[in-house]
Length: 374
Image (tube, rainbow, N blue to C red):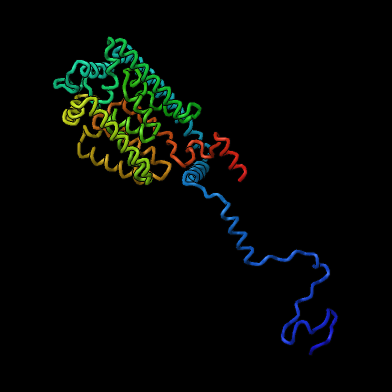
């Protein structure tokens, strides 16, 4: 039927085969139209793009927070008290060990550094035969430290030892700043490692500056640490596991530059280092390395540690695993060398990623404002 009218208007405008649209009721006349499915999809996609994706560090922190929340409050409180008590006992033991060394052999390891630098000043071999490896006079490091200390070795030993001890103490203060003096983890770790720290400080051990370089955790600092004591080179496994090729390349470049500098400044000592320093120089010391029980066991444990570091590299435990491997892997491992474990409590900042201790970058006003706006 065409040409007619009904109560809503003429019928011709809809054609013979088209149904008229449903009538709009008076109370719906002012209601907004419902957006189409395509509009919903576009809006949702735009909204999803604006949602920040949590980083691996943030996801790991959230997982750790959930794990801590799952621990009953009573058990958590008891564990914290136990940890605090252990830190206090360790700190007291460290003070006792430090006092013992101050009384009996203060700044004992300064002899090795002084005599090595003095030999270079006198044109003598850096690694002479006949020095007892069990004594404080053996120099077991690459030439770099002895070369750097040559100007100080022109002084009498007492003044040299005092100047070197100032370097060691200043390194420890800088280490505290790097780890964070306001973090309770820093002071708990210092208490737990009180014995090795007290020992290393009072005998003027190069382990303290090396730990500072480890804690900085940048390619240049790890290369310097590896030229004080070789095992920090194992930290590079952490970069390999993270596929941080920029840091790997930078580390290799720094190692090459430092090696070239030592060859130029001390060619004889550089050539003699690998032929004169080895497993035969372990000596009769209080060695806590598994190497004492079995060299095969030591090799197996080092390989397991390397694989574990590689597997954990992309997790929050990767840095701690790398520092632990570098600290515990020497075949000649004395208690004071455990000081290096301090560097494990704070992962260094990685270029392009937030500070792991300040994941929200709250210390950066621009970053904080940006996050607030988002």
